[in-house]
Image (cartoon, rainbow, N blue to C red; front, side, top):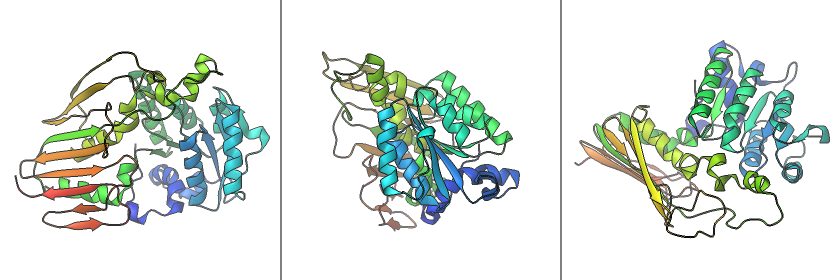
Length: 360
């Protein structure tokens, strides 16, 4: 699937929403306007599946991307979320919010109605459902933005892969929520790595350590399934654990650095240390880790189990040098600097601090 990866420094707000359209339209020889706009108008009808914080943020970003964008449909398992987020978006972007009562959909089948009403579909809900919703949107001929991790089990991964192949055949765009590939500093770092500035990569270490987040106690006024749907990041059957939710960004960058080489093997370990007063089954491991081997390099992530001031860090070793990147998961680390044969600095809110050491 063609991924829209225009350098971060030149991506405008308009480009954000045109990204999904451009990826497919370029293959079809069409303009993004003909591909994404509603027939006979300059309006891009966007529908939102999943009205949590990330979905609402994606909807706001889409509307800020172009004055012709209209949010026309919203769907979620909980009616209260649809209502609350609709009011918040109406207060923020009243001229672009076109979601009437008839296009507020609730239930596990709400995604079908959102897809029917939209030209571009934003999928930002529990990862367990993302492959099915992605496939349905592509089959309906819609462009799609889908949050990571896109799928969390073998069956879901195969379904998502088939959906992307169908999108290619139908000249539709699929835009991933793996945002590292849009960051100018990270793109420059990868260019330098691929240019051989640290030599051949012989080892990669990826860590993403942090403590529990979100709700930590069980609500007393909800049924069990409602509790789990409403706290997806706490239940591995819905979110896939924190590895595909958070560490996936690190693994994406490692795969990118290694020339899109997929892992060839992996192993993991972990265990309980006693009673845990936490909601769900994601953060109940006091220690644990996963080691993934990619080609001759080893990617060694430790998903969670400790609170650190710098929860995420990366190291890469080549036969002629080393590369280190440090920063928190909220993308508010120190300015990014590249030190090596061609030093460079990114002071404008870059995501990582990076050093390229040309020595062994």
